[in-house]
Length: 164
Image 1 (cartoon, one colour):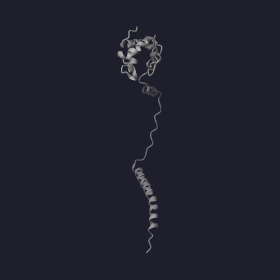
Image 2 (cartoon, rainbow, N blue to C red):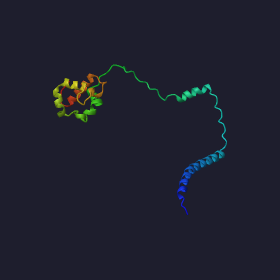
Image 3 (cartoon, rainbow, N blue to C red):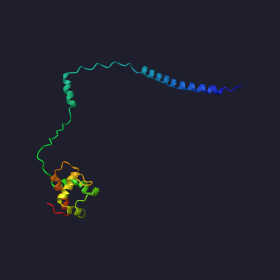
Image 4 (cartoon, one colour):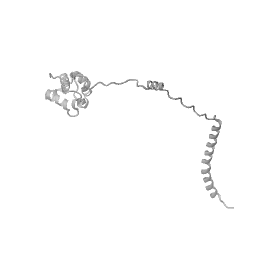
């Protein structure tokens, strides 16, 4: 007897690769036909009602904004300088309250002593123009030079200075 099993196995594999996707496709078509025949016949949708002029007012009412934002003009009035304490609380305290980036803490007399020795004008110049890791005007460019000066005097006096 001869052994011809090798040729038969190769053809069986090819047949399986063709039959399996075909069977899946046939099964899908049969299920789709059953679902189509079981469902009621589709009826055409009724024609949309003609648009009446009165509905546009109702639509506009439904889509109107909930609120309207009104932005005040930039020149709402004369600028009033903030006090040194207000500027320190709003801007300077971010770094000077915690001593971030070697900023002298507010009220720390030892840290402020060498800075106070430089003089009021030098401290104000450093605060206005920036020095080392401190940005100009503490990073708030909307501050006036007078407000920065007020903040420097406030912090330096808290550290032992007698600036006016």
